[in-house]
Amino acid sequence: MINSITRKRRMSGYMMTSEEEITSLKAQIKEQAEIIDYLTKKLFGQKTEKIDGNQISLFEEENRVFTEPEQTGQENQSDQVQPAKKVKRTRQAVVSPNVPIKETVIDLPDKLCPNGHGLVTVGKKFVREELHFRPAKLYREKIYTMTYKCPSCELIDGLAHLIQSQAPKALIPHSLASVSVIAEILHKKFELSVPLYRQLQDWKRLGVDLSETTIANWVIKVSQIMVPLYEQLRQQLVQQPCLQGDETPIEVLREPGKAAKSESYMWVMRSVTHRQNVASFMLMAPAVPVASPNHFMPVLRGPFNAMVMPVIIS
Image 1: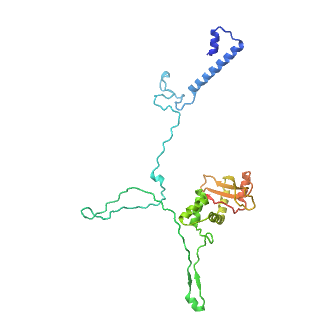
Image 2 (image 1 turned 180 degrees about the vertical axis):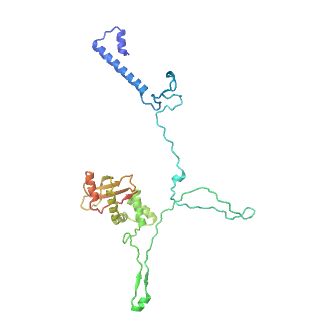
Protein backbone atom coordinates (compact mmCIF):
# COMPACT_ATOMS: atom_id res chain seq x y z
CA MET A 1 0.00 0.00 0.00
CA ILE A 2 1.50 3.32 -1.16
CA ASN A 3 0.73 6.56 0.64
CA SER A 4 -0.75 9.55 -1.22
CA ILE A 5 2.47 11.62 -1.29
CA THR A 6 4.45 8.80 -2.93
CA ARG A 7 1.67 8.20 -5.44
CA LYS A 8 1.57 11.88 -6.50
CA ARG A 9 5.33 12.04 -6.88
CA ARG A 10 5.42 8.94 -9.13
CA MET A 11 2.59 10.28 -11.27
CA SER A 12 4.46 13.56 -11.79
CA GLY A 13 7.68 11.73 -12.69
CA TYR A 14 9.50 12.89 -9.59
CA MET A 15 12.57 10.83 -8.74
CA MET A 16 12.96 10.21 -4.98
CA THR A 17 16.25 10.14 -3.29
CA SER A 18 17.29 7.07 -1.35
CA GLU A 19 16.53 8.72 2.00
CA GLU A 20 13.05 9.77 0.89
CA GLU A 21 12.37 6.29 -0.43
CA ILE A 22 13.46 4.73 2.91
CA THR A 23 11.17 7.13 4.81
CA SER A 24 8.27 6.28 2.52
CA LEU A 25 8.81 2.55 2.91
CA LYS A 26 8.92 2.88 6.72
CA ALA A 27 5.60 4.73 6.67
CA GLN A 28 4.07 1.97 4.53
CA ILE A 29 5.37 -0.74 6.87
CA LYS A 30 3.95 1.08 9.90
CA GLU A 31 0.56 1.47 8.24
CA GLN A 32 0.45 -2.19 7.19
CA ALA A 33 1.49 -3.32 10.68
CA GLU A 34 -1.43 -1.37 12.19
CA ILE A 35 -3.85 -2.99 9.73
CA ILE A 36 -2.49 -6.47 10.51
CA ASP A 37 -2.77 -5.83 14.25
CA TYR A 38 -6.39 -4.65 13.88
CA LEU A 39 -7.42 -7.63 11.76
CA THR A 40 -5.65 -10.06 14.12
CA LYS A 41 -7.61 -8.71 17.07
CA LYS A 42 -10.85 -8.93 15.13
CA LEU A 43 -10.13 -12.52 14.11
CA PHE A 44 -8.47 -14.00 17.18
CA GLY A 45 -9.43 -11.56 19.92
CA GLN A 46 -11.45 -12.62 22.95
CA LYS A 47 -15.18 -12.77 22.30
CA THR A 48 -18.01 -12.78 24.80
CA GLU A 49 -19.52 -15.92 23.29
CA LYS A 50 -18.08 -18.62 21.06
CA ILE A 51 -17.68 -22.38 20.62
CA ASP A 52 -14.41 -24.11 21.23
CA GLY A 53 -12.56 -24.25 17.90
CA ASN A 54 -10.99 -27.63 18.81
CA GLN A 55 -14.42 -29.26 18.95
CA ILE A 56 -14.71 -31.94 16.21
CA SER A 57 -17.40 -31.07 13.68
CA LEU A 58 -20.41 -33.34 13.21
CA PHE A 59 -20.52 -32.44 9.52
CA GLU A 60 -18.11 -32.16 6.63
CA GLU A 61 -15.30 -29.65 6.57
CA GLU A 62 -17.22 -27.16 4.48
CA ASN A 63 -20.33 -27.46 6.63
CA ARG A 64 -18.78 -27.44 10.08
CA VAL A 65 -20.51 -25.84 13.03
CA PHE A 66 -19.92 -22.11 13.36
CA THR A 67 -17.28 -21.19 15.92
CA GLU A 68 -18.68 -17.66 16.21
CA PRO A 69 -22.17 -16.70 17.45
CA GLU A 70 -24.71 -16.10 14.71
CA GLN A 71 -25.99 -12.52 14.54
CA THR A 72 -29.76 -12.38 14.17
CA GLY A 73 -30.09 -8.62 14.40
CA GLN A 74 -32.08 -8.84 17.64
CA GLU A 75 -29.13 -8.80 20.02
CA ASN A 76 -28.45 -5.86 22.27
CA GLN A 77 -25.55 -4.04 20.60
CA SER A 78 -24.88 -1.81 23.63
CA ASP A 79 -21.75 -2.49 25.68
CA GLN A 80 -23.29 -0.90 28.76
CA VAL A 81 -24.07 -3.16 31.69
CA GLN A 82 -27.79 -3.28 32.29
CA PRO A 83 -28.61 -2.23 35.87
CA ALA A 84 -30.21 -4.86 38.04
CA LYS A 85 -33.87 -4.29 38.69
CA LYS A 86 -34.43 -3.01 42.20
CA VAL A 87 -36.58 -5.38 44.18
CA LYS A 88 -39.40 -3.59 45.92
CA ARG A 89 -39.30 -4.15 49.66
CA THR A 90 -42.34 -5.68 51.26
CA ARG A 91 -43.96 -4.42 54.43
CA GLN A 92 -42.48 -7.35 56.34
CA ALA A 93 -39.01 -6.15 55.30
CA VAL A 94 -39.68 -2.52 56.29
CA VAL A 95 -41.12 -3.11 59.78
CA SER A 96 -39.01 -5.08 62.25
CA PRO A 97 -40.68 -8.20 63.66
CA ASN A 98 -39.65 -6.99 67.14
CA VAL A 99 -42.12 -4.08 67.00
CA PRO A 100 -45.05 -4.94 69.30
CA ILE A 101 -48.47 -5.41 67.71
CA LYS A 102 -51.73 -3.99 69.03
CA GLU A 103 -54.96 -5.22 67.51
CA THR A 104 -57.97 -2.89 67.37
CA VAL A 105 -61.38 -4.35 66.52
CA ILE A 106 -64.11 -1.93 65.43
CA ASP A 107 -67.38 -3.37 66.65
CA LEU A 108 -71.02 -2.44 66.06
CA PRO A 109 -72.56 -0.21 68.74
CA ASP A 110 -75.77 -2.22 68.68
CA LYS A 111 -75.55 -5.85 67.61
CA LEU A 112 -78.98 -5.78 65.97
CA CYS A 113 -80.05 -6.04 62.34
CA PRO A 114 -82.34 -3.37 60.79
CA ASN A 115 -85.31 -5.56 61.75
CA GLY A 116 -84.25 -5.63 65.38
CA HIS A 117 -82.97 -9.22 65.46
CA GLY A 118 -79.84 -10.21 67.35
CA LEU A 119 -76.62 -10.78 65.36
CA VAL A 120 -74.21 -13.70 65.58
CA THR A 121 -70.45 -13.24 65.14
CA VAL A 122 -69.14 -14.63 61.84
CA GLY A 123 -65.56 -13.32 61.83
CA LYS A 124 -63.40 -10.24 61.46
CA LYS A 125 -61.95 -8.62 58.35
CA PHE A 126 -58.49 -7.03 58.13
CA VAL A 127 -58.76 -3.41 56.92
CA ARG A 128 -55.31 -1.78 57.24
CA GLU A 129 -52.18 -1.48 59.33
CA GLU A 130 -50.76 1.72 60.87
CA LEU A 131 -47.64 2.69 62.79
CA HIS A 132 -48.03 4.75 65.97
CA PHE A 133 -45.35 6.68 67.83
CA ARG A 134 -45.47 7.32 71.55
CA PRO A 135 -43.41 10.43 72.42
CA ALA A 136 -40.92 10.22 75.26
CA LYS A 137 -42.22 11.32 78.65
CA LEU A 138 -40.50 12.31 81.86
CA TYR A 139 -41.78 11.48 85.29
CA ARG A 140 -40.37 12.16 88.73
CA GLU A 141 -39.82 9.23 91.01
CA LYS A 142 -39.78 10.05 94.73
CA ILE A 143 -38.03 7.25 96.59
CA TYR A 144 -38.85 6.62 100.24
CA THR A 145 -37.68 4.06 102.75
CA MET A 146 -39.97 2.55 105.36
CA THR A 147 -39.06 2.53 109.05
CA TYR A 148 -40.33 -0.10 111.50
CA LYS A 149 -39.93 -0.80 115.18
CA CYS A 150 -40.34 -3.89 117.33
CA PRO A 151 -42.76 -3.28 120.26
CA SER A 152 -41.90 -6.65 121.86
CA CYS A 153 -38.19 -5.85 122.08
CA GLU A 154 -39.02 -2.40 123.42
CA LEU A 155 -41.00 -3.93 126.31
CA ILE A 156 -38.04 -6.15 127.20
CA ASP A 157 -35.24 -3.57 127.39
CA GLY A 158 -37.10 -0.29 127.11
CA LEU A 159 -35.20 0.71 123.96
CA ALA A 160 -36.74 1.51 120.60
CA HIS A 161 -35.48 -0.99 118.02
CA LEU A 162 -35.91 0.73 114.64
CA ILE A 163 -35.41 -1.19 111.42
CA GLN A 164 -35.30 0.69 108.11
CA SER A 165 -35.39 -0.59 104.52
CA GLN A 166 -32.37 0.11 102.32
CA ALA A 167 -32.78 2.17 99.15
CA PRO A 168 -30.80 1.17 96.04
CA LYS A 169 -27.63 3.18 95.53
CA ALA A 170 -28.00 6.20 93.23
CA LEU A 171 -26.15 6.18 89.91
CA ILE A 172 -24.75 9.67 90.63
CA PRO A 173 -25.14 10.82 94.27
CA HIS A 174 -27.18 14.00 94.86
CA SER A 175 -28.24 14.11 91.21
CA LEU A 176 -31.52 13.86 89.30
CA ALA A 177 -29.91 11.59 86.71
CA SER A 178 -31.29 8.06 86.45
CA VAL A 179 -30.07 5.17 84.31
CA SER A 180 -32.71 5.83 81.65
CA VAL A 181 -31.86 9.55 81.38
CA ILE A 182 -28.11 8.89 81.09
CA ALA A 183 -28.72 6.14 78.52
CA GLU A 184 -30.78 8.56 76.39
CA ILE A 185 -28.08 11.26 76.57
CA LEU A 186 -25.33 8.82 75.56
CA HIS A 187 -27.48 7.33 72.80
CA LYS A 188 -28.09 10.76 71.25
CA LYS A 189 -24.48 11.91 71.59
CA PHE A 190 -22.48 8.85 70.55
CA GLU A 191 -24.90 6.91 68.31
CA LEU A 192 -26.93 9.74 66.74
CA SER A 193 -24.06 12.32 66.87
CA VAL A 194 -26.20 14.97 68.60
CA PRO A 195 -24.00 17.36 70.65
CA LEU A 196 -24.92 17.99 74.27
CA TYR A 197 -25.90 21.63 73.71
CA ARG A 198 -28.40 20.58 71.03
CA GLN A 199 -30.04 18.15 73.44
CA LEU A 200 -30.92 20.90 75.91
CA GLN A 201 -34.03 22.07 74.00
CA ASP A 202 -35.36 18.51 73.78
CA TRP A 203 -35.05 18.06 77.53
CA LYS A 204 -36.63 21.48 78.13
CA ARG A 205 -39.65 20.52 75.99
CA LEU A 206 -39.99 17.38 78.10
CA GLY A 207 -40.12 19.46 81.29
CA VAL A 208 -36.59 19.81 82.71
CA ASP A 209 -34.30 22.82 82.12
CA LEU A 210 -30.79 21.37 82.18
CA SER A 211 -27.50 23.10 81.45
CA GLU A 212 -24.74 21.83 79.20
CA THR A 213 -22.33 21.73 82.16
CA THR A 214 -24.72 19.49 84.11
CA ILE A 215 -25.15 16.82 81.46
CA ALA A 216 -21.44 17.02 80.55
CA ASN A 217 -20.59 16.24 84.18
CA TRP A 218 -23.06 13.34 84.09
CA VAL A 219 -21.28 11.87 81.06
CA ILE A 220 -17.87 12.24 82.73
CA LYS A 221 -19.00 10.66 86.01
CA VAL A 222 -20.68 7.75 84.26
CA SER A 223 -17.57 7.13 82.16
CA GLN A 224 -15.56 6.88 85.39
CA ILE A 225 -18.08 4.39 86.78
CA MET A 226 -17.68 2.29 83.62
CA VAL A 227 -13.86 2.04 83.92
CA PRO A 228 -13.90 -1.64 85.06
CA LEU A 229 -16.00 -2.56 82.01
CA TYR A 230 -13.59 -0.66 79.73
CA GLU A 231 -10.70 -2.57 81.26
CA GLN A 232 -12.38 -5.92 80.58
CA LEU A 233 -13.08 -4.95 76.97
CA ARG A 234 -9.53 -3.73 76.44
CA GLN A 235 -8.03 -6.93 77.84
CA GLN A 236 -10.18 -9.01 75.50
CA LEU A 237 -9.32 -6.84 72.48
CA VAL A 238 -5.54 -6.94 72.96
CA GLN A 239 -5.74 -10.74 72.98
CA GLN A 240 -7.21 -10.78 69.47
CA PRO A 241 -4.85 -11.99 66.70
CA CYS A 242 -5.64 -8.98 64.51
CA LEU A 243 -6.81 -5.45 65.35
CA GLN A 244 -7.50 -2.20 63.51
CA GLY A 245 -6.10 1.00 65.01
CA ASP A 246 -6.13 4.72 64.35
CA GLU A 247 -5.14 7.99 66.01
CA THR A 248 -6.73 11.41 65.50
CA PRO A 249 -5.39 14.73 66.83
CA ILE A 250 -7.97 16.72 68.80
CA GLU A 251 -8.08 19.87 70.93
CA VAL A 252 -9.35 19.56 74.50
CA LEU A 253 -10.68 22.64 76.30
CA ARG A 254 -9.14 23.50 79.69
CA GLU A 255 -6.94 20.42 79.78
CA PRO A 256 -4.80 20.45 82.96
CA GLY A 257 -1.16 21.37 82.36
CA LYS A 258 -1.55 22.13 78.65
CA ALA A 259 -2.17 25.24 76.57
CA ALA A 260 -5.57 25.75 74.98
CA LYS A 261 -4.26 25.29 71.43
CA SER A 262 -2.16 22.19 72.14
CA GLU A 263 -3.19 18.88 70.64
CA SER A 264 -4.13 15.64 72.32
CA TYR A 265 -4.81 12.36 70.56
CA MET A 266 -7.79 10.05 70.31
CA TRP A 267 -6.64 6.47 69.91
CA VAL A 268 -9.11 3.94 68.57
CA MET A 269 -8.68 0.17 68.68
CA ARG A 270 -11.24 -2.03 66.92
CA SER A 271 -11.66 -5.75 66.32
CA VAL A 272 -12.04 -6.87 62.71
CA THR A 273 -15.55 -7.15 61.26
CA HIS A 274 -15.60 -10.92 60.79
CA ARG A 275 -15.19 -11.56 64.52
CA GLN A 276 -18.25 -12.79 66.40
CA ASN A 277 -18.19 -9.90 68.91
CA VAL A 278 -17.13 -6.61 67.32
CA ALA A 279 -16.07 -3.83 69.71
CA SER A 280 -14.40 -0.42 69.42
CA PHE A 281 -12.24 0.98 72.22
CA MET A 282 -11.59 4.73 72.26
CA LEU A 283 -8.91 6.26 74.47
CA MET A 284 -8.09 9.95 74.75
CA ALA A 285 -4.61 10.74 76.06
CA PRO A 286 -2.57 13.98 76.23
CA ALA A 287 0.56 12.52 74.62
CA VAL A 288 2.64 12.74 71.47
CA PRO A 289 1.37 10.85 68.42
CA VAL A 290 2.40 7.25 68.09
CA ALA A 291 4.74 6.48 65.23
CA SER A 292 3.96 2.82 64.58
CA PRO A 293 1.86 -0.10 65.85
CA ASN A 294 4.78 -1.04 68.09
CA HIS A 295 4.17 2.21 69.98
CA PHE A 296 0.39 2.01 69.63
CA MET A 297 -0.11 -1.33 71.43
CA PRO A 298 1.90 -0.57 74.61
CA VAL A 299 -0.22 2.54 75.13
CA LEU A 300 -3.38 0.46 75.08
CA ARG A 301 -1.80 -2.25 77.25
CA GLY A 302 -0.31 0.15 79.78
CA PRO A 303 -1.82 1.92 82.83
CA PHE A 304 -5.40 2.98 82.24
CA ASN A 305 -6.15 6.67 81.68
CA ALA A 306 -9.27 7.94 83.42
CA MET A 307 -10.12 10.17 80.46
CA VAL A 308 -11.89 7.52 78.38
CA MET A 309 -14.68 7.81 75.86
CA PRO A 310 -17.60 5.36 75.85
CA VAL A 311 -17.15 2.06 74.03
CA ILE A 312 -19.41 1.25 71.08
CA ILE A 313 -20.36 -2.40 70.84
CA SER A 314 -22.18 -3.90 67.87
